[in-house]
Length: 220
Image (cartoon, rainbow, N blue to C red; front, side):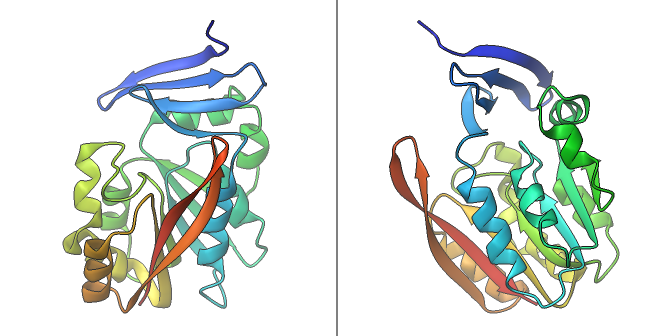
């Protein structure tokens, strides 16, 4: 017997997005039937934010690619050095569910005056951003270049798009990319267009086991 129930469902040009509530009360987000995240295991979001915030002395302006269930944004906003956070979410339904309380913790998160949610493709937002706009750029729209939520995102991890990231970073600014697997190609591209890149393995509990994930970092 299925122990989950749909709370909300929406269709976009990219497919179907579903918010489900499990028997244990947790919410989970699925895209085209694929599990993306839930409200129980949020270690990956926290580790991504903490690793990024540790890279710069004054992370005043931050951009996060991917709102999801809001836990990366929450972890970034926990740092009082952050004066402004842009979170870019391509699925309007996800942003709406955060605003209207369909995702229960959403309204409290969005009440932080430092936070702005932008409903758009993160690649477009980066292209349109002025030079030296951000101290940090965190990309968590997929599980890395080899585990795409949307195939169209593949270009985001290539040198031309990463060159745009380098342009919008302030001197000393850092980009951090979350990935389910180590990606030497991503590291090479980051090194070529941003600066010397680092691969950092992190351990995250999920589904009763601990798995290894990777952060790819590069400083301008």
